[in-house]
Image (tube, rainbow, N blue to C red; front, side):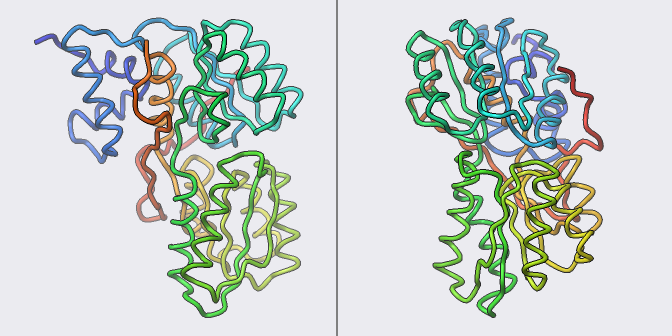
Length: 340
């Protein structure tokens, strides 16, 4: 039988060597879907069917996400060691800048594109036209209409919102608790779906709980700090806050500035170098998170396969609920240096 190295599997799947090592040697927990991707790649390599991901395929990754997630993606790509993958960090770029970047990259239909962006009509038109010319497009974390992409990789965002309601509702029951919600922007479908899932589950199962304020933080430190500060000034008696978006450092500083750190129950998204210290300090109580490296590995695989699977183009990855007591192993202690 052909000997397959961890490096071979890392290149084939887009997963980090640490994740591959955990899966092969039982050194820690690995999500079932991640294990399935590794097993499939191992089988392909052993029979000599070299996946396209092994080839030096130029790929563009354009992400408008928070600082924690972009650092995780950058770290996983550094570990992968594929210089043909270009990461374009679009943090806080406006829609004109996003459209200009995507339009420039869509000029070459041979380069697959992995994308996180707001849903806007000009962007949709650009992507649909590029797909018509044969460009492979994979949306990541936040989806776009089906005619603009070939596949979508994310957690199930509506289910994540329902999970948040299940956790917080279970803590407070129907005792008249008052909750606040922090969103980034409804133009991100992931934010909209999480918030919808949260509201609908509370209405169905915890009608005594009131959602009294919605803060819009635009996924940024400053925007979230200011929006949450205004929410706390208006409602200092909130029992819990659910942050569907990024900007967790700003959320924490707003709580500190209001003298309310540790007073409310806080549930947010992502386990990374920003949220892990907040969990340890007791400022954030729960995070809903996935292994971003594994999720990006799935996106890279779908971007480079010669043909896509016949099943649904929506590919959900597993997520978990984490606290200070079970911070996952995929969290790195510090962010890698970002270039470009």
